[in-house]
Image (cartoon, rainbow, N blue to C red; front, side, top):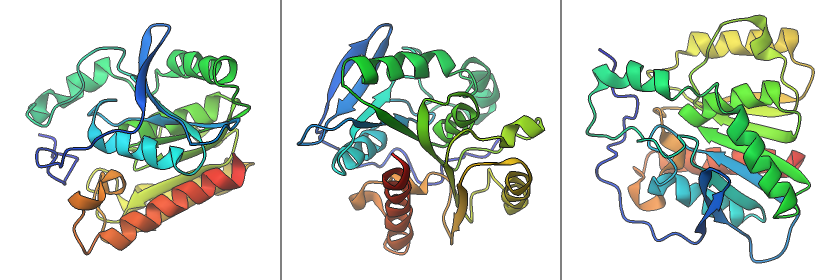
Length: 244
């Protein structure tokens, strides 16, 4: 029996009126938000298990666009059903088999091509949350076109030493009280990156925070978590600004 990895109640979320719009890119749908001025910098946002339409993730896309980037969240589930808060957790492993965060290379290429050819993007970063954090970790090992990455509480997969040879600067954000990722795993990740990683990286653990903490909209935050949520977002944006 797997515990619900998202400790904030996903059912009680406030409505969010988005600033961007939806586009079709080859076989993918995507949500795009552009800044008020033209720019050649872009950020791909990789959603969590709740998919590309989840209000929290669109809020993040808009937030990143507000910092001067073309921000885009493609549907990495390619039109299949996202996980829903009403689904049963014992079905989650099967659902994950059909939604593998390590099998996102083709979609990433489609989106990179669109950003370069249709949006004039020259530097492109990527940020991802939970499922998306795992996808970002994978892509930062495989795709040199991504100038920088931020992986937020992606479960850590230890399958080989290849997991640590990042191609470009990557920042890993974790919550201290995340029951899907132990502190031991985080310390091991740090050790291995010290050994194998040749590019700038950073790992930061935010006190008292649970899985999924960083993408909450302001009205859904608990007051005691707000400073950490805001700090994590600032840190995420600062990393992107430093390298993208």
